[in-house]
Image 1 (cartoon, rainbow, N blue to C red):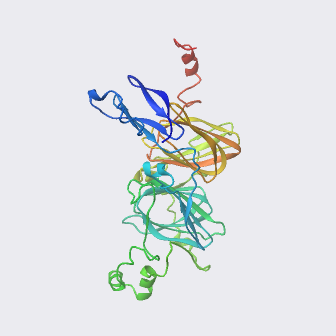
Image 2: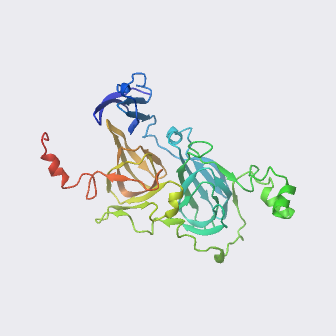
Image 3: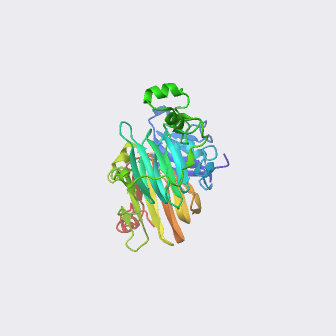
Length: 396
């Protein structure tokens, strides 16, 4: 675990002596305990768990300064699929977070499937078509484009198609507490692949159930594909008449929607996705936000009070992220496009953009997340509170 230096943490009724190091992050949650257990349990110290006076101190034994990049799972003519592996980044598994990326080349088609996890899909680049089937409803075809954030509840069937010359790139971030493997999305294919969910049934049985001929059955359940992404013939077309306006209520374009917060001097802007501007996000229990910082701009230190960590993906640009806990900086490092980073609850985080600016998309496992700025007009520390604090007894 590494050596930890001692640091004091102040809570209700006194202070907690805690251990901290560069590769362990601490946060506090209240737990009811019996009166006789008000002393620090020595047996817990050094094992990532301290308890005192009704508080339990957890440690996230992961170095937040580690660069987290996606690992390719499959790559073919139609495109590729990559994910952030929980075996390499234990923080994913520890906090039930999944992260993956789908890239489709021209005429690339991701076969119909459903997932074991609720997630938010964000279109990083390009445009295309999303086919989606919500439980008990007919299939909907939706035109998607760069900047779209799409809420996908557990069990929703989806397929993705890129009809454009530009690659279609989609980021998936979600909650894996219902997943087969914690920290990872598992997709269940409905056709094409040898492992699709219908391949175990006999053609005769499926034919009787759907009253379909053999040629259709061969396409649906035939073992002719060993992959989940294919390249369709150039002549394949989806008519505009099929693309009905299903965007309202199902997705929100973050680049075309008025920001929730912005800097009048042009420093940047933030759009928060919640049940007010995207009602379906309440069905997946996730909150999200998309933010941009212009060159050399800084985002004030922010504190998250949600009972979950915040996961952030850097869309473009680069900068510096500073995360601080009760004993000092957990990480103070450069971040760049294509990386993930995590901020545990109750810790403060500050982001500073490089000269070229920085853009990011993040989620938190709470559909109406609560984040407090520590400084600025709407911050916990305002222009009015600083003089009052300075003039209080004992201040210097």
